[in-house]
Length: 120
Image (tube, rainbow, N blue to C red; front, side, top):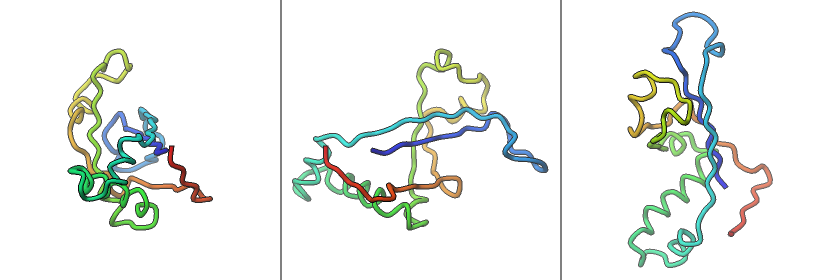
């Protein structure tokens, strides 16, 4: 299971002052690996998507301890029901909707402390 907790500031950064006092929108989503993805890994290089899935596996296993690997994550957030999601209007967030975003210094990765891994 991968849990992604994203906090998006509703205003521009403050030059001086308490950065933690800014209002944010928080989105929490989780992902569970599919059987079809596990099958790609089992088939190995003979599957056309193997290298992509293998790179994702490498990121998942190394990102918690390797900063250079952690800062390679790029996400493409897309909200197609902006009004229903009660997202604030304006160009600040809507301008980033559907655009690739590289997660660098602001990102962190926490692994299961017991390192439990289970195939579904």
